[in-house]
Amino acid sequence: MTTQEAGTVTIYERIGGAEPIGRLVEAFYRNMDTLPEARELRAIHAPDLTETKRVLKLYLAQWMGGPGDYSAERGHPRLRARHMGFKVGTAERDAWLLCMKRALDETVPQADARHAILAALAPLADWMRNQPEGQD
Ligand code: HEM
Image 1 (cartoon, rainbow, N blue to C red):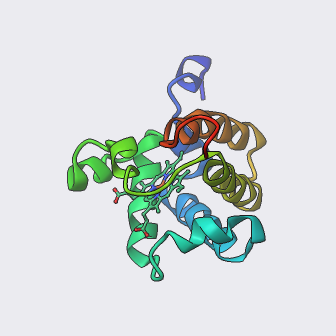
Image 2: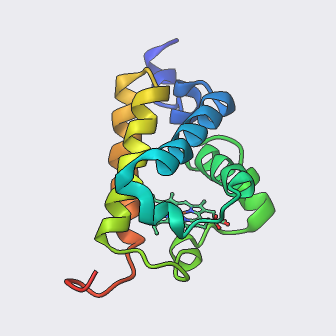
């Protein structure tokens, strides 16, 4: 690969595409099922996560620079609006990020990509909060 090309490689390509993202999402929800810190977060999700997993896989693939199947199917992500129906306070944000950090550690061996993904997801998760400061 030339230096010029290196700048255009997406995170999606760097971690290996749809298959590793599938493993990441499976690990993420497995962590949500098992970590005591995520018990309340898990409780507000559907009992059957089949569809949730499918959608998060599509979303993350698109978010990492891969195919735009998420928006082709669901339009603009409007993620914050889609989360308005759920209480997202600091505890929920932190539990979500904990599940994701563990999942990244488990499934993405490339340390630079792992750190870049978490660093980009942290402000996104924070932006999802929808409870008044200090009361969440
Ligand atoms: C970077 C942070 C986050 C991302 C990227 C994200 C992404 C997503 C996506 C793509 C969906 C599917 C939405 C759709 O139907 O199109 C979803 C659903 C959902 N998210 Fe998040 N989310 C984030 C943070 C959170 C947080 C902090 C909470 C805490 C309450 C949360 C709770 C939920 C719930 C309850 C659902 C519905 C799942 C179901 O019906 O089973 N999310 N999220």
